[in-house]
Image (cartoon, rainbow, N blue to C red; front, top):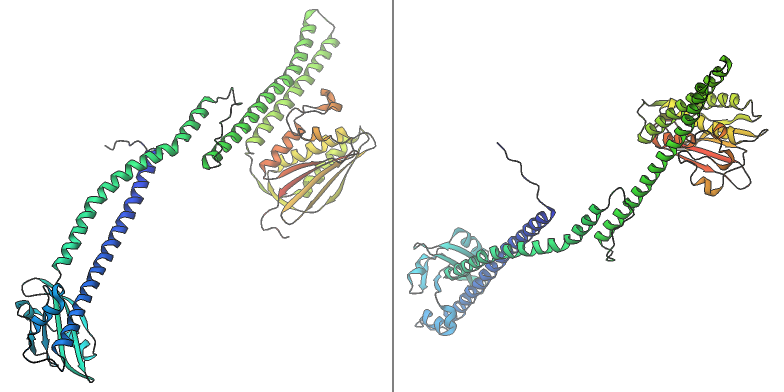
Amino acid sequence: MRWPTAPLSIRTRLTLWYTGVLLATLLVISVLSYSLLRHSLVVDLDESLLAAAQVISDTTLGPQTPASVDPERLLRELLGSEFYDKVFRLLDPQGNPGVQSRSRAADALPLSLEARHEILRRRRTFETIRASSGEMLRVLTMPVVRDGQLTHIVQVGMPIARMERTLLRFTDALLLLLPAAVVLAMTGGAMIARTALRPVDEISGIARRITAEDLTQRIPERGTHDELDRLTATLNAMLTRLDAAFAQLRRFAADAAHELRTPLTALRGGLEVALRNRRPADEYERVLASSLEEVERLVRLAEDLLLLSRATAGLEGARSTLDLEPIVMEVSEIGVRLAQKTGVTVRVKAATPVTVTANASALRRAVLNLVENAVKYTPPQGSVEIFLTHDDDWALLGVTDTGPGIDTADAARIFEPFVRLDTARTRETGGTGLGLAIAQAIVLAHGGTIVLDSPPGGGSTFTIRLPRTPGEPR
């Protein structure tokens, strides 16, 4: 059975990451330090061997050197401690041994095949070999050239035990220091993580105290202008948007309740009056006809609220590639019929074929809402024009009217639900105030935008921008 494991906290993960990175860094530095130290010791050892070989070549094999001179004694006098634990031997050009140090280790100095090849090229060779006794030696094989001729071969060797002991002590020191460094890193990482995340705990504590009933509180910024301050600013901006959204939701609920209560109150009042006393049949017919109008208004309001809710949450209908021109023509015909009683002229100003990927019925409803709104606000003898065009990436569908225009203050809230302008506040002519809100929600659900242009002096133009179908000829 596998037991569930609790997820690690950010503080623990930061500590582990900090410790792991520091451990990896220390390991890399330790390996590099060990390599550099070994290389330095080998270089020093090679330089010492080369100095000894040079002294042997200059003193022992010189043309003025007496034959009775003891090379080993002379070298000890000249090099002193530098000659300590060194062994040497001289060979003729054929590799036959000659004078050598009295130490038995000198017999273990071999003349390898690589060294023979380098001697023929007049080059010296450094090698690390194992003597017959098992001891590791560092050996220099150097040719002695006189007047362009190879006269002797000098070999100098020295045990590398001291170098290995130095490297071993360095390794032991690393093995002792690395665990201590890891423990210190974990302790320091935990302290750093705790200090760095303390403001986050404070932010989360304040955020937990903010509820939907009181979204006016804000998280105080520290003024450091760092990542935590940016996080605080982001959370405050989110709280501001949530506060506005909740306020809009409460306003929407209140407006919806008001819009529903008005026809329900009228319906209830008419029925109560009709039932209070016995009345003629024609009066009952009038009450029922009036009640049917209120019921139809309630049905329309419920349908509009449902459509607005679906459009705001994202339309669920199937989408297809469709040409906007037939929709424009169909909506213009409906607009002509709506404007017959008002004396308003409705016509299509321009219609360029352009295709979009959309829900046909929803998009038709959005355009029809704009046309109905334009006809409703345009005075008699005015005109409403519909145009359809496009640019490289967008389809542009607009509705222009010659109405009184919209003030800047009203333009900022014209797309909010249940908003009706002061000139059309009555329920008979002003509608429910959901037409523009539904149109905007539908357009936004299609990835487009809807904008209002109402210049001073009257007239308004609502323009819908929708992304054109990919691959459509430009």
